[in-house]
Image (cartoon, rainbow, N blue to C red):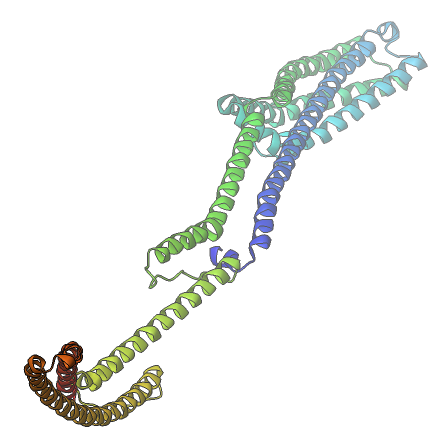
Length: 477
């Protein structure tokens, strides 16, 4: 059931759960109502049955009393007639008419009782009649011991009534007496003369039958009244609201309440297992992913929206893992290429400009190609720098030589100027006229000497600077 519900969309699942949670209690309430109605119907049927049994028993009790009363009335009517005592015949026609009616009524009541007695047994005997099943169940549920007493009492009373010493015995006495009275009435009606002795013999015989009939009637009526009393007691017990009516309703109500609670619990369990628990698992998995545990996967149960989200999340995690693996592979490859490139270009730092890095189709291939181009350009630049350095060295050497020659010439000129100054000084004493010129020449010579010394120092500094540049250029080459 959980898997079936997991395959349903959440909205349809919730609607189904709500319908289920509403429909089942409704069905339970309906069944409970049907149970109540059936219970009331059973009780009503039991009440009607008990009333029918009571009514039939009361009616037949009245019939028994009327039969016996009519029998005694007919007996005393015939033997107490004054005309019968005078001449042994009856001439009053009304007596015969009433006697015939009484006799017919006795026969009818007897036939009615004879017919209703087995009917009562088959329909209203608690112990054996299917018609009394509801009554029997109610009595037994209310009070089993009392019910068994009622059942036994009715069975014993009915058995006594139906036995040979019961109704059949009384019926036999009644039939005999009625037949005798009918014969006697016929004789009297036909004006047959009966002597006092005949009347006395008939009276004794019929009185003996009447006496036996009365005794038998008393026993029969007592037993039948017991049957009637059982019907009355049965009716009271059935109409009373007892344990038999209350307990099934209470049990059914408690069962319905428990069933409704179970349905609600089952609905909550299904919702928890198919919605709340998967969402909690997704939240837990999201927290693990947030912690970096990307190997975690969401369980996919069913085909609902949660399963779709779980499938999408698993697919996203698989893609992330695949991308991470690809990135790791690319990183390893890039690291290997970088290490190889570094090993290839490390000799450049030592001055080996003939190194060529391997050019590949990956991202480092462009860098290797650029590096090779840079090395080529750097090699060309070094060559040009060396050529320029040689040219500068040659030019510097020539300039140095020229400066040396110039310095040498300056020294010669200084020496000549010194000698000239000495000669001018010696001639000053001789020729005063040229003293001022000599003095002027002396000043000029001093200034020239100073200028020559300054020029010599400048040339010397220039030569030293050119020497250093040449030395540095030769060291770089």
